[in-house]
Image (cartoon, rainbow, N blue to C red; front, side, top):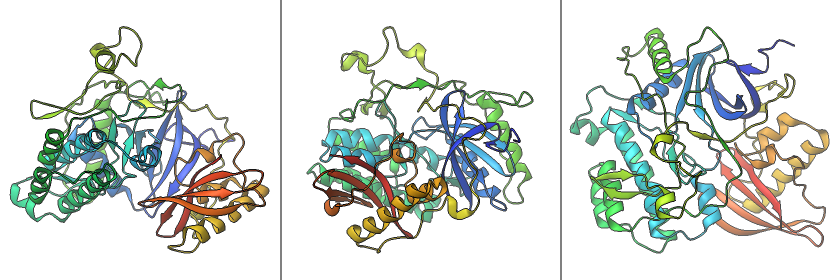
Length: 430
């Protein structure tokens, strides 16, 4: 077998996540640790290259890190793997405290402000675009980020549809968390949003409520990924400086947009301690849990440990462990279920899933599951009992939690509503 057949840019593929009109996304292995590999499809190099440009130029600690950029039959951008998103956390948490809303959203507002400061916009701010790492740090994915201008004036900010969309998306998240915690959105936050000043909105949120660390389930044992991830091909240099230089070269080759001025990035970042947002010098700061919570890291860990981003460890696959998809449908969520009817939609989805499991069709299963679903990597995937009957338990945004009523095997399932129909996020026995 061709050694590159199951890899992209030297990263062995572990599983497919999704495929859109512009990109395919995979979970891949980087020396025993997971990364998320985005590869542009034919004719769609420009958006992905400009996304990497915007994220690297903004240089904000609450933007999901870009750890590599390359070309491998299309532009390739490698991101830190953080499977849990804000929607997952909200479903687990139920009724967050106002201080948790501060910790979840103030850093995201600061990250948006950093993008706007360089004339860029995020391209989307939903509960799925905000990732939560194992230490409780929120990270904005910024998938679709791009620069609208090289002169980010106040007039641009006031007239930009992209900035308006970022402000609206963040406000909807803030209203969702405030409502879940039983509090109205502070007037100072609303006033900052009227001005489309996301940095000021985050600062106002910090001033309104005492921040608290996010309540998290105990994370699985993880290991730090060296930053930057070492390239597997000897001729490719390592280091974030090299990442940036490759972005600049890619942009120079594109037919639109002027080449950017290369700026060296810091060579290392930290495995964050449990943290929460606090007011200080008008910004968002990290608070070390070892000092304020009694410790959550190894003895002696501190500022000198600033280095690698956190990632989920992944098993190193064999050459044949990841069958490449045979068609776009293999990675595209399947159109299935009744729009707007979670019970009927979930029932049709689960029936199709059972057929895929019976047939041992891995590509079919990928298309039915939400990206990052634990069921895609479960040693023994959950099966729908023969006598199972679905009932709605809770609805939050695009997520629906349903109970499987069964005499022998009661369970719960979490399904997501998408434009095409329904996908499965997770399922577990009660």
